[in-house]
Image (tube, rainbow, N blue to C red; front, side):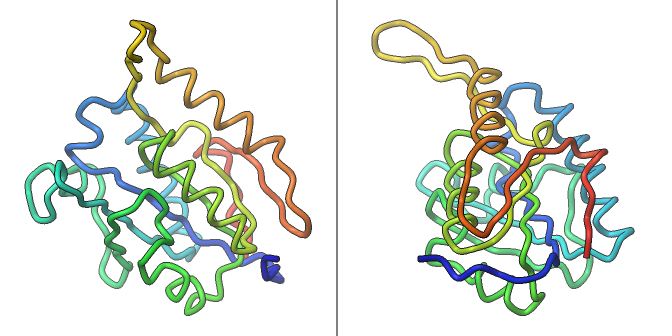
Length: 186
């Protein structure tokens, strides 16, 4: 059973908006611009912004592809989390970081929708956080299946947006919002 986190202290979590991830992502420029807008709004409202960067055998830590996209850069004092698994919580200091902020509500943006965003969203809810998925600020690439069919990126994004709108967890709230309409209530 999850520990329900009392109150409404938000944090903006920006996951894997890295050069190598965004290069082939669907509608990347628009999504990056929406993340920029969310980051600027969070900073104006004094909401902590936490940055996550993934590394693996294809995304080598420190390489040019591993870097955050040039449009986004952490401000002085903003925390960076480095991960090797889909969930931003697995074998990282993310829970401890949120505890230092007193965070109870995760506002989530980034990539890739079907891997790291989905895993992080469910992990946040499983750990008792409220969740807002920025429906216009996450992306992925299409998946070509062995049978020759393709799952289009837009459909993967739409499916997660629908799931996060209707999913139900006891004692927690989850919702979707646009990056411009999100309310960082603290």
